[in-house]
Image (cartoon, rainbow, N blue to C red; front, side, top):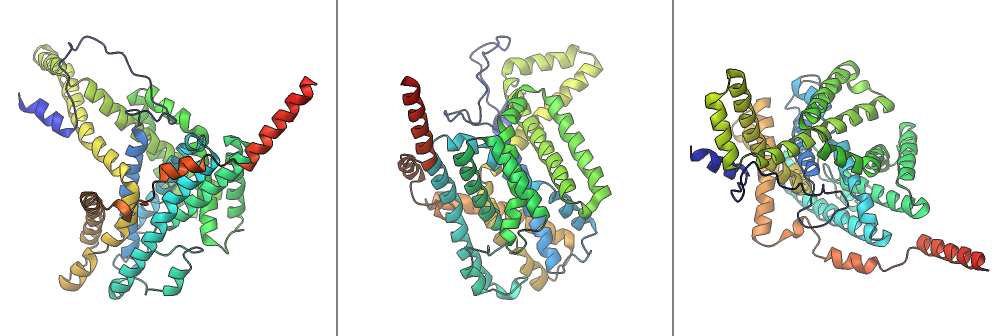
Length: 442
């Protein structure tokens, strides 16, 4: 039927009729995390971020409704349990994916790494602190807590707003990684240091500064991404898709069982273990979807479609059912994966904007329409937070004003200038090497 290829093309598949289907194309070199050539962007981190940003929005919506006493289950009902389960791993995944690209970025030089990373975090942190403060003041009668100007002025020490702690904590982790690399030059040392900080946070050493406490708890996941990132990427592209799918399902099943046994009473070691299981499960699921999409794009040529049609006519019932199942799974994958990749590519924008947009339906539903159903409030807040953020991003791009999320400064040019600044540790290493060479020559 002529509609089948058209539908697949709409969902993101591309068909190539230039060569017969039986001719194998040479497989391109597997892209690495440090590969910056055009067309070599790896897919599974965006898929993972896209899935987790949906969980972030859902968790924040449920938490806001619980704070407003619109979900009165004491945190033990359906929504409270879902929120606790989501909070086991969704933010560790973001810290892990952030750490994936630390090693590749720092190869351009520590000053360039610090400037680019910190500018990309501090700018939206300051802008959205002001945006949230203004909106908080305008909608004071509909918020869970009154606006506080003194907290806005303490933004350099204490994040203001729901969720901005992530940017502050990630900035601390970036500085910690740069200092560790400058001092030791080893990624494994960064893992050891973050484990030490995690142990100190478990001893409540940073309780007087909550953001340092959160950064110490989350830095270990960035270190996981730094140390194991390339191995994870190679496994994501080399493992069979059914293996990745089994790892994903088994991991989430194990996570759910352990969560039902431990609940929210998990200690520091159990917490990092549960979060690690969640990170591996999300990685496996994202890698499975990315691999399935690549496979679906490679097998949806017109020749293969004709072969599948012929097998349906001449094959046995089991083969026909298997073929139909693969086709349905391919269609589902090609519909789901591009959407998750897109959400992952704008995950920071959604993270910043959803905290305001997801609260817009609440006063309308509860105040004007007198609707207090938790299901309606959760669904409306979730959809408004996600769809509203997507609309806002596209409107900002359409009016050519992306500066609500990104700095107007040309960070790449400034970073290249900063890379020409010599790091003191590099100078010391160079001087030591020169003295050693001269001494050996003498």
